[in-house]
Length: 85
Image (cartoon, rainbow, N blue to C red; front, top):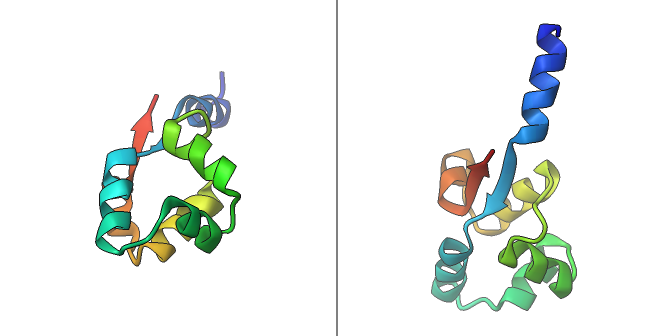
């Protein structure tokens, strides 16, 4: 197996999931509902629900929107996301 294909396989194994409890705390501090948060990041409330419950995982683009909406930079990544693999 080449190094490139090894990296590609490894990327498939790494899953980025939402840290539900952290996001709920942040939304509460900002007095923002989950539905309003979904609207601000550009997804349906149903899809946001799936993300929060862990049945779906955010794409890189959506992760960026989530960080921006919560006014976090890349240093806040580990506050709201966790790597699973």
